Image (cartoon, rainbow, N blue to C red; front, side, top):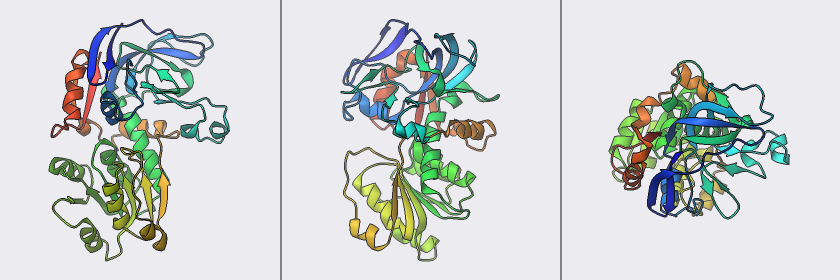
Length: 343
């Protein structure tokens, strides 16, 4: 089969590789669409250390079941599906508690690191365990389904924030996750939702997708704008979707006393936290990793058009052109939010 292979950092080849064989309990999925994730882009240049070449990346995908491995039940060939990016064991202490994203034996599709290697979905076929498969509802296309993984991450982040009806929330970072978080917050019944980003085109899109306020930290005082919009208190909660010190400082400064902060972004391995502000104002800080069973809800929100994922897909392109799109995303070409590749 054809696949897009990261041969070495910053160099791809589109070439033949062996077809994967579904093991016991696995299904072979013929990939119809696979989105380029920001983690893939950073994996391309080696900055994450979790895409050691050679590797077939890709974990935001959807397609059709092409074959079933031994022992698989409840699934049929020809069914349109998507799948979780996290391969969890289902038997460890965390999995038994329902904390599948914290699985002690967690593996991620399209990742190769010191601990394991698992090829992903920038290929004609990918083999995945049946317990991470999800059927596509009527009306959800393959490109839309390739957005479900990102939407599930956004939904889990909002769950970790636990907003109340009418709450005001600050979203720092209007990339793909931040833009999805904004929409989920509105579905959850939040009141004022403010977006922060340095890119004017992303702030414009954030407003179009439901943000009531757009703030550019390079041009205005974010904290002052939030205080004015919230009666001098600050936001009830904040979602940080970047993962660096500057963004976290912005999020902490923007929430009120007793507020809550959910951290999704993990661009940096470590950051400086304004500890005294967090402690003296009793700000609750919650990490948010991947997703934890939010796939059915995410699919439902797309199917009933409560979430607009089409507005976030900047381009669809053949897999053979993937290297060029990776370079454009790495260069942060203006206007590019999400690119979906099709074999």
